[in-house]
Length: 208
Image 1 (spheres, rainbow, N blue to C red):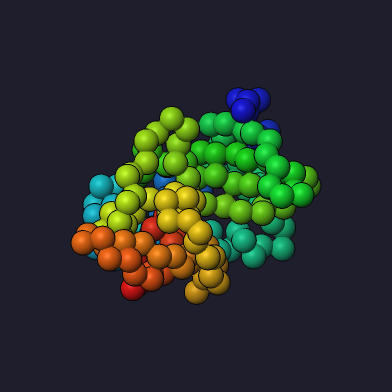
Image 2 (image 1 turned 45 degrees about the horizontal axis):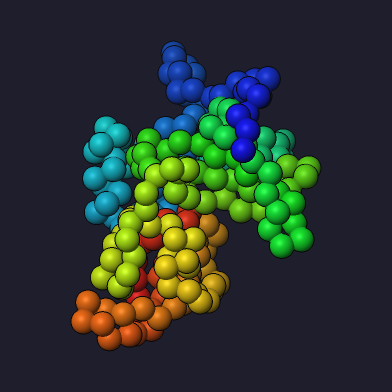
């Protein structure tokens, strides 16, 4: 694991309101993009997060609109470059091998979830292979022993897959969503079959 050498030439975008100018898209806006998709399953938790950020729902919707416009712009840059432009230099960069694929992992802090990082896995050329929330290096994840431990926003998709192996990946209901099928004991020790649903890699709900 190595430290990133520095920001992109144009630097991270910051929120800089001014007369007649739209604020540049930055890390706060990206957190709102994450929340917008999570609001479909956990509206109460999203409302709490918006209050913590002192943000109105309309601002969340506007951030998501601008993000979608960037994704579909005819002048769009590579996905990896877009994240560096919006979030600034990553906290760490590491080379990994996943199966036969060599990827670069870059990760950024997410203030709403101090123990998590937003990780982007990209292949040579800048195309993004995966983008999700993961546990920060050195941070202790939750103890996952029963289905009762699987609380919304408490754990990531890779943590659930490890805790209740073998888990079976399932097709998500939308982009940035994952589902895992697995068996787990309940509070009384009786095993049952469950499906966990994740958004941006973070647990949203459990379906039994």
